[in-house]
Image 1: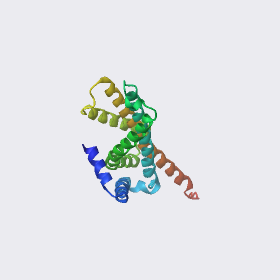
Image 2: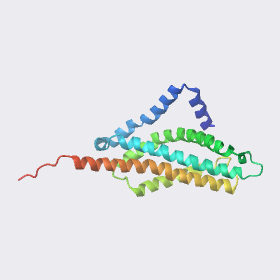
Image 3: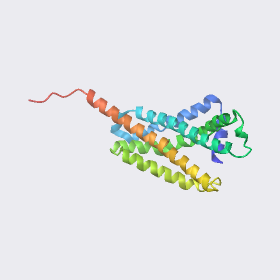
Image 4: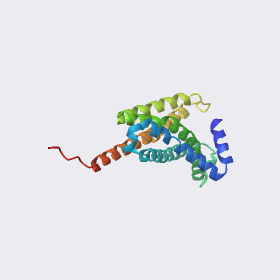
Length: 205
């Protein structure tokens, strides 16, 4: 499986090299950010870019913790579940949430670099950075992920399908929405701030 392959390769690296690769995956899309924004880059800069990644990281952590907690509870109420023992469920949730965060984060960093960053930069450049377009992008991400989820072997009953769709919806809203919303709001704030701080030209007689 591709996710397990990425995880195996990640942990096979030296710690410093693994973090270096991670830093490159985050910083490399700055080239696309700069090129796509063109003249709009000067008032915007790189702060919206890194703010979007930070918001996405926080949103992803919340999604992973929420979904793993739901899955853990559903498993713990099953007859003879080993998770029903004292302290086992909390340890299981922490471990699985960490695993889910790493796996999903690997895919997400690549997807943001190839798709999210140039899309956000293009929308800023063409003045399409609106709440309506954020909702459209979030809906597109959800539909694509939902269609892809039906090809996985885990989707075998109505309950698992419902939980999975809820997780994908939460993921799309929190992660995708947080990425674009944070970038657009930060860029708008910086542009407004620089406009207000710019020296005013005296009126000609």
